[in-house]
Length: 211
Length: 211
DNA sequence: TAGATTGTTAATCGATTAACAATC
DNA sequence: TAGATTGTTAATCGATTAACAATC
Image (cartoon, rainbow over the protein chains, first blue to last red):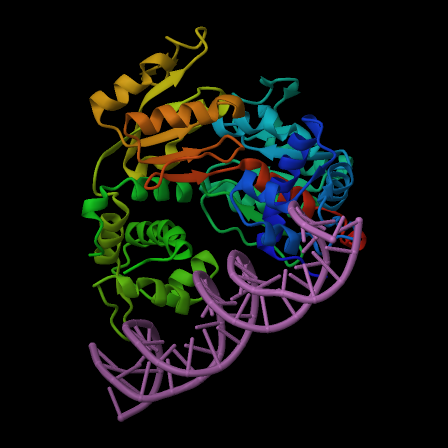
């Protein structure tokens, strides 16, 4: 079955609620309760979950443990995975150190930069390597996940290198549209879009006409 | 007229293309060309732009300068705005220093943290202030945009404080669903969602069944 | 004029929601 | 049994796209 983009983006939210539920000792949780905690309808959740074999029990809800495990298998969280990051500016460093990703079971195990001043510096336990080593490292370690936090002007080149070395999924923070071959996934996390929206919505509501 | 969420999120992309076009000396640009540069259809762009008074010229395209200005007015970029940030961990610091926001004309002018070890430290030209001063500062300076990069457990409290002090639009990076009163805008920038998706999509395509 | 590109309508596609019989 | 909550269908809502007359 084909799972929609919208549903796929909600799975991590469901997973978060299930982790919380488990932590607080719940064995079962209803779709309405999950919905309440993330601000959507229960129907939505029941619909999203139809793609799993696991069924809920009427008047009881979903088995927290089993649903959590199933989501983890689906999302790949049951596998320990490695990712590399290109570009260790402030954002790159922040992502590399970010604790909030720990439950995804993806470790950023290699960091690269083209700036000789950054090469050799450390981020936590990682030592930054020169950009020229990236392709070789990706190939040797068989890494398939790449993160791009380089400036716009080099982002496409870095993406090309990643793809040529075997990266299959790219998390791109450079505000530009990357061209990648069919079969390679790119998620653009253009932070300016969010900030622009927040700025726009802050406009005085008495002053909000369309020009 | 009511502008859809999807359209609103594309305006910053259009703005980026118009900046580039202007920089490269173009006076006019067609909807198809804009579309090509961001990977969507021209029709989509023409539809999105119907809410503006500015019209394109058949066989010529849109006036780059005028459309850019119009988008800026609509998004509020013509106004110099201030934002505050709560939580100066690595991510908070990275956002505060991030150069990519400069064209949005929103400056992060105050940073707060509840950790006494961070209070008094500097980020670029900013000096981190104690969390307790946040409400007063927001009120005195009349700031309406807030950024939350504190841990989940304090995010709701910080949001409540921001709202009580007059913040009208919040950019939230804590992976939790904030409750805010009607009329306050929240944009959740849950980075785990993106990273989870990138991880999922990296799974071996020969191994991608639904459980 | 011929070619390009617009603005707009209607068709399509995709996502959400309401409703409710089934069932624990 | 009565109440709660499921899975699923049909209705609705929203977003994208194709098509094309209008026009520079």
